[in-house]
Each structure stands twice: as structure tokens, then as C-alpha cells.
Length: 206
Image 1 (spheres, helix red, strand yellow):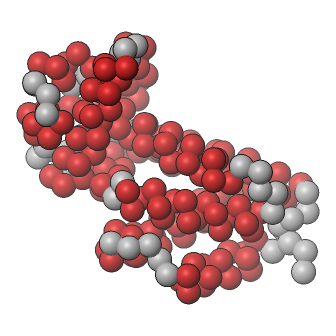
Image 2: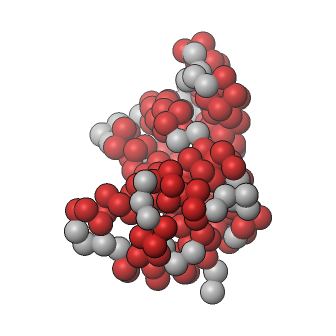
């Protein structure tokens, strides 16, 4: 059983009380900080519980192992990122505007959760299926939106999945260069340069 499957099974035991949900979230937030700073292998459950301010025994009420909380953290942050982009782009019909708003939302998200870069990269060596799930799940929804834009004639026809990965790569590396390395959101000049490139790549009506 992979850590994805273990995490899925464990989610059925999520706390129902508000207090339990808060404690679980504190552990996930602490895990993000610890894994992002120390790396998966150097981090310990003690590091996580100390950061969260809870007893070590409390950890096991919510997660059976370090690998389980790591897997759930990757999945939870993936859901949170996709939700943030959906909320930000809700009601938008123009594909280029969706790309711009989605890009800015992504930059804002990783500025608040910069540890997720290191955590997702570590996932390749902790659980490769989890690592692949993170990108494939994101690309699936992205490609669906691009297909709709192709069908409506907003962008040139093509392979929507390939295009989704191209656009994800742009956001990933620009975010790494400016948000992660410089610690700030890309300037409007950078965003405009990126959008000019995306506009040419997507094509569509002239």
C-alpha cells in the first residue's frame, strides 16, 4: 500500500470536533515548516509536535507515522492551491485573464507556503506515486479548462495535457526564481513578460 492509499484510508478518521480539526491543522502547518526547513529524512515527529505545541502522543491520534503526515500534507496543500485558483478565477470567461489571475494566485499561495516547493520535490524520493499524483492531478483540471477554451475558439487547438504541463512549468520556475529565491512576488513587468509569452503560445483570435 502506497502512502497515498494510507493517507486516503487515514482521512476517514478525521476528527469531527472543531478542536480536533484545529489540532490536526496545527500539526499539518507545523509539518510544512519542519519538512520545508529540515527535509523529510532529517525531520522527526518530535520536531513537528514541538513546533505545533502539542504532546507527542497527540500526533498519533491524527497520523500513524511521519510518512502519513507527509503524504497528507502534499495532498492537503494541493487541494488548497487548486481551491484558491478556482475561487480567484470563478466567473472569468476569457482564457488569458484566467491564466493571469491563476498565475498571480499561484504566486500568492507559494509566498505563504514556500516550503511546499521543497516538500513536493522531496516527495519524489519519499513516495514517487505521491509526487506524480501532485502534478497529474493538477494537470488534469488544467487541461480540462484549456480544452474548453480550444473548443470555444479562444486559443489554438492542440494537445491540452501537453499545454497544461508547459504552463505549469512556466509558473513553477518563475515562482521559484522570484518568490522562493527573492522572497517577494514577481513585479508587474515580470508578469507582463510571462503573459506576453503565454499569449503567443496559446494563440487564438488575432
